[in-house]
Image 1 (cartoon, chains in turn green, cyan):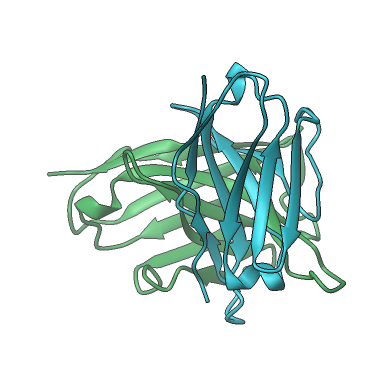
Image 2 (cartoon, rainbow over the protein chains, first blue to last red):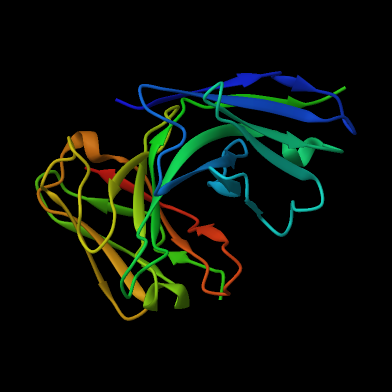
Length: 127
Length: 109
């Protein structure tokens, strides 16, 4: 069974860079019809999509974060990563990594879902 | 459009049926998926595609879509179904973006 595990610093100072890694185990990070995503949840609020990256390294980011976000995949290590620069208190959240599976053909091609999630890591932005 | 809207909090009596909805223009072109999130836990996929449940999700959960509205129905709600439920879809702007609804809190009485 596929498992994902987030790791990284739980405390980041304002204006610095948040860096997280998701390690994939129990399956391959190079599976064809899937990509890898980050989702966050500020305390007491709903889920916010941050971005995703295909196995070939092509990323797509939420427009509101696009200028500050970078994602990458290291297939040799079975990991993908998130960097978020110039953080503020508004970036304080539980960050989840997840696998995205999508429909590749038919009328609803492009439909997707997050079928495996990490347990989440709380990142607090504070001096 | 890149927005999904969901119902305000709902309550359901134990053993009764509750349906929650998710609305958005993108649902004409892309299926919604649904996630259950209990307090302090990671979200859990409960419904995807036309009406598919992941392994381990009880068959009291069902899904449907009509036009721009996707629905998640719990038939015979159990105490353990009390949670926040989020819908998700792909944005139909052509920019490969994803979006979540704001969530619906389901309380089982």
